Length: 78
Image 1 (cartoon, rainbow, N blue to C red):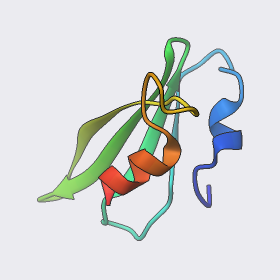
Image 2 (image 1 turned 120 degrees about the vertical axis):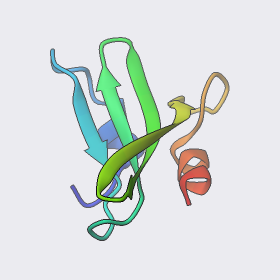
Image 3 (image 1 turned 90 degrees about the horizontal axis):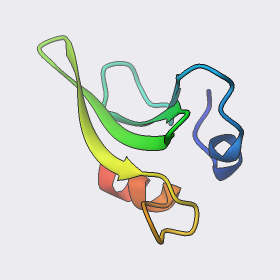
Image 4 (image 1 turned 90 degrees about the vertical axis):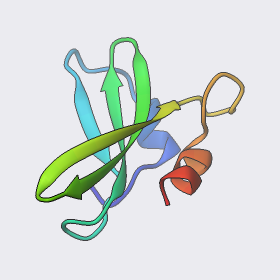
């Protein structure tokens, strides 16, 4: 995927959990979103000594009232 958009994040849950990525170079940290039946959560994914790590950023809310907007999550991830 070329990057996360509000449109891709608003699509309905398709019956299974899905990881979406904002893209980036191999081995570099990046913003990712986990889509589940309960909602969407942003994470910062990075690597240390070849091991994948995740840092929770918060839940997605397009209005930013009960969670983070995509822009806010990107700012925190970078």
